[in-house]
Image 1 (cartoon, helix red, strand yellow):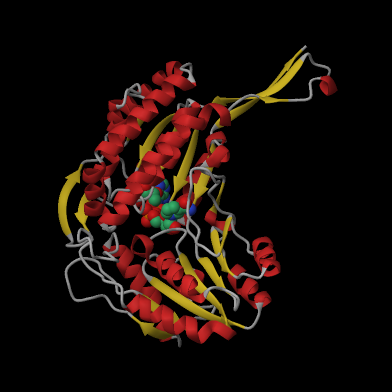
Image 2: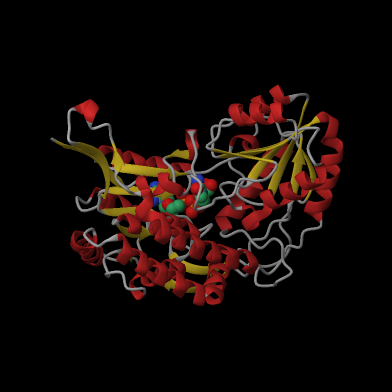
Length: 457
Ligand code: NAP
């Protein structure tokens, strides 16, 4: 894939970049390794001051940064602004809390015959971050803020279609005062990832992206005995039971499906509705999806912009065609409007069966499938009939049902009477083919730490 900014709303190539050559990659690896040695000795107060300065810079540049994201990957300007704001919050959260989250953990000294016993979190070193384009700022910040606050240094291999956002991120931390080797962007293609990951100076990797990319990076890292965190795809269920506030459930369902033009790992993708409220849900949901405004993502009135890449549009069209060709009903949408760019109408299908690709694979665009179920057991069985396990949404006001759904939905995150969202304060991650490890909260900042056991006699 060429490293280039191509506006998804027009298909126009705006800027192309040459990938770094071997020597340029080597320079950055050496700088990362060298700066880690001094950076790890800095205290939390110094790191927090730099992190707050980076947050202030981003806050001051919010509008330009949001416009850059919209230009590179097509999210609506409103959602780009919200993403940049969330990054500022996340950076300040780790600046404020890293020291407490990584405080020494006392052990039972008496039980182990010690004068003192405790566990201490220490940084590991240069971590490679392979990142996707869909939240081009937030995915990176939610790795970088905790990693840098823990004393690690980062090397960013961003998605090839967001190079300018990648370069912006590479400069942001240095401009804020961090030593130059603390966070560097490597403009490289995915074929260059293996040699960086195998380099002895890189100690671990995190990848957010598709399942095949995750498998590949994890296999290489595994052969080098290097730790990985994987945040991969999802096909999140959205279960609606009869006691739910249907109006709220429908409006949240629409947001949960079309957020980020439908390209979110935690977007609800399969809507599993109890038969008692199914017909009403379907009618309202289809009406709301049809009324969404598809158009120029820079326009303030646009609800749904284009898909980020031509390939993404092609993949989505194939999923819908496969389902429709095998008996699913297209209730609305199902077409790409006749205009330049990679747009796709918000689409709802019913009659999707577990054998269809639309059920089995991740639909990365504004395409929802509806399922009718007779009871909570059938809902849980269908919700869990996927290889993914990222998030799950459940709508019911019955407390016993809530408890059952929280326990039985097989996912890393469950939202009841709401939708799965990431917060700096809560762990984020999945199970099964959605990956492993956690980002955010105390769990995220500890992923790339050596938990050193200390025994003092
Ligand atoms: P992708 O194609 O897997 O790309 C993600 C990153 O991996 C890019 O930097 C890409 O580089 C690189 N890459 C691709 N194949 C690779 C390989 N074989 N070896 C090493 N690196 C490789 O995914 P995407 O299309 O950018 O993003 C969409 C996917 O990310 C969806 O599946 C979505 O669900 C998932 N996602 C998950 C989360 C989560 O938290 N669980 C969050 C956001 C997105 P190039 O661009 O150069 O190919």
